Length: 116
Image (cartoon, rainbow, N blue to C red; front, side):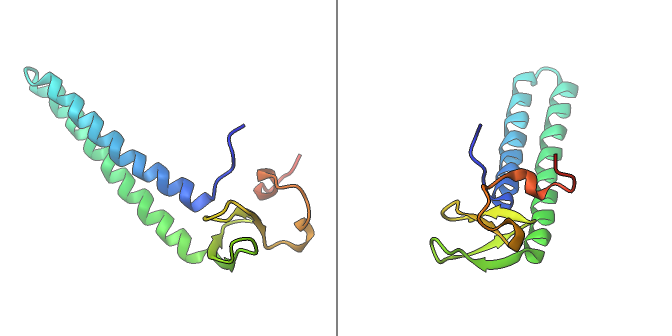
């Protein structure tokens, strides 16, 4: 299983990937120079991916403003917590604001409304 990362950084990484995916899609359109319609479709899809990344960046910026800022007890740097449990952005220390979860093994399932 891959290691858990901070939610805000994970979404920002997705938005950055959308930008590069958009560029790759547009560059793929260059191979169809002799077919302007197909080239136009690739260019439009690439632009849509880049516009989508702009929307994701705007959305995570607004979510980040509502996140609770805390000081990580491990690295003593400021970070933000989304949900009941999250990781430090800098040192990947598990963090929680819920006193009932303190001392328990970190699980991403703590953020789900219904736990199994």
